[in-house]
Figure 1 (cartoon, rainbow, N blue to C red):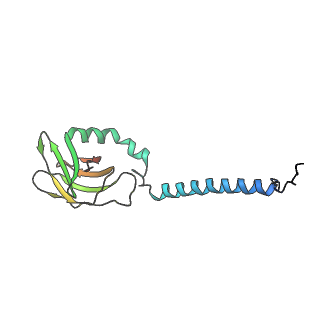
Figure 2 (cartoon, rainbow, N blue to C red; figure 1 turned 90 degrees about the horizontal axis):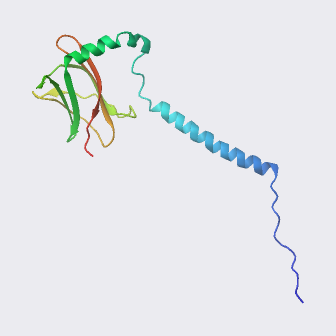
Length: 159
C-alpha cells in the first residue's frame, strides 16, 4: 500500500501590492536612467555656436566667400604632447594673427584648453594634453587684410 503525503508546498498568490511593486520598481529604474542621461547631456553640452542664428545667417555667404578667397589650407595634429597647426596659402606657410584657439574633445568642454601658440617659421606649436579620441581645434585667425578666418579643425591624434 502506498502512502499519500499531504502537499506541504505553500501556494503563492500574486496580490495587488506585488504587481504594484514590480511596476514601481521597473518605472523607477527607467526614470532614474533617463534622468541620469539627461543630466549628463546637459552637463557636457559644449554650448551654442552663435547667440542668434538668424543674425549670423544674414552675413554667412559674404563671410564664407571672403574666407574662401584667402585660399588657406589648415591642418592640425598632435605629436609628442604638442599641437602643431599649419596654415598654408599658395603653397607657402603663413603666420596670421590668431585671435582665438580652443583645443578640446569633441563631446565635452571639460578638457578644453587654450593653446599658447608659438610660430617656428613653418607652423604654430603649443603644448597640450591630449589622449586618444576625437579632438578639435576651434580657430579664429585674422588675415593681413582684416578677413576673419573661422574653422573647426579635426585634429589628428596618435592612436
